[in-house]
Length: 186
Image 1 (cartoon, one colour):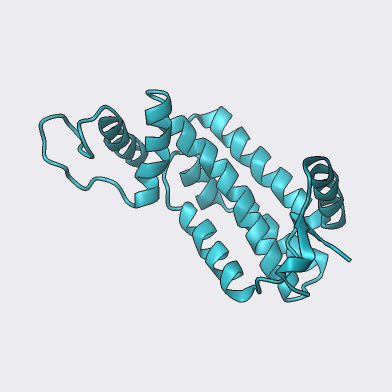
Image 2 (image 1 turned 90 degrees about the vertical axis):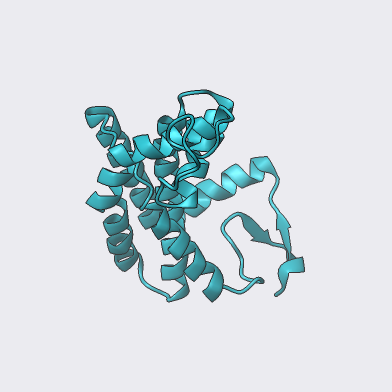
């Protein structure tokens, strides 16, 4: 089996295959639902934003306005953000719609939690764990209070988990492995 034996699925087939995949891998489905619902509930209920997010978004707003990566106009560029991702994510939003950086950072936090679960699920499947063991791991990742608390407050450290898991998945997987968005051509 090699990469040439796979064909990208057309959109109607993609949706059907995704539904079948989520039905067969019920642990992933439960964890994704749990992660999204817990994060959105926390976001709606608390509407919490930490000062780290405000500082980072101020740098992104200044860059979008053409002032540069600085906190206040007239100051030289000062490093005031924790990582490149923490300023690039709100910068994309600020360039598009002014004042939407924190909202987009929180939205990306919800999306990143789904990718974290998908990567963790793929790694667990690679090691032939049963569905109950996978469910335990995925529920832990879905309900980790630090990811929820800090991620939904606009702090970017939770993105590191997604990057780490994606690195592990990509370093341990082979290019000819069948991924969940592809199907095998026989």
